[in-house]
Image 1 (cartoon, helix red, strand yellow):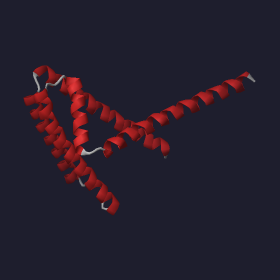
Image 2 (cartoon, rainbow, N blue to C red; image 1 turned 120 degrees about the vertical axis):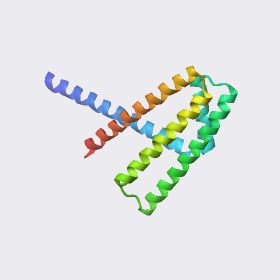
Image 3 (cartoon, one colour; image 1 turned 90 degrees about the vertical axis):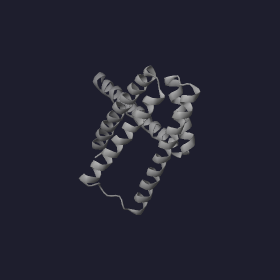
Image 4 (cartoon, rainbow, N blue to C red; image 1 turned 60 degrees about the horizontal axis):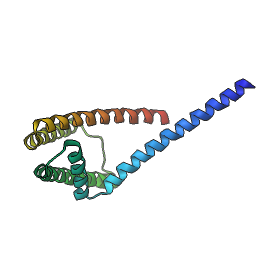
Amino acid sequence: MKKILIIAVALLALQVTAQEQQRERSNKQGKSLKMMDLSAEDAAALQTKKMTLHLDLNKSQQAEIKKINLENATKRKAMMAERKARKKSGEIQKPTQEQRLEMVNTKLDRKIAMKAKMKNILDKEQYTKWEKAQMQNTKNGKNKKKGLKKGMHKNK
């Protein structure tokens, strides 16, 4: 009787844990969907405010970074709209090796340009702090991808 009770409690605990993880995952997806609904101007303003809090930016730095963030948000919105249109029309295909190489090169060029712009705008301490945050975001993104891939295999 004790064994059955212990097994029942263990199964109940496992079920509760699984439901919590599912809720967390759906909350994260909800936040990202809300960010996608923002206009480019709103997204740039939010990003600039977050950077101001994190890096303690002055007014001139805020203005310059807001321009950069607006430019990036506009490009990102255009790319998302293009991808959505291709998905609707059914034109989405896996990129070829050359297309992947081109996409990676373009992404790295954008990162290099952003780094150069930020180096001109921020002082040394702010730049170091920003660079650490960028590295952490990259690390978090890679971990998130790994988690998504693991989750995909579990569902099959």
